[in-house]
Image (cartoon, one colour):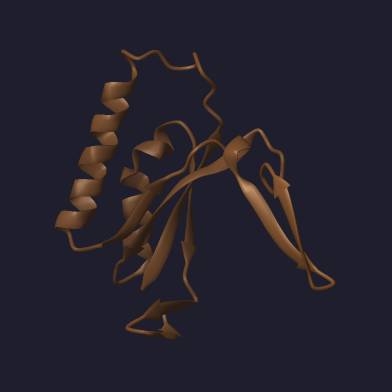
Length: 125
């Protein structure tokens, strides 16, 4: 089964974390991603740039509308994701618990309904 582990946390602003504080967080995330990969569970992983750098696109009346900034202006934002493929929801919850982001934010576990594999859409199970 495929799940997205969505990292939701308050935006980090410049100066919130010192340069000395960053390496331990990077090491935790490096070890976490490596453990997912070693277990054969990792599909993809991304840490996003700040929400202020995002752009939304919609089509209304056949015209493209582009807006700078996030879809929703919020204190807590989607800041990254790990897509994993594991046998059960319980296994996904175990991986979410091990995610370093759970120490300072929220890790939302979202099951995939369908997935694009080998050139076609099909069950994510």
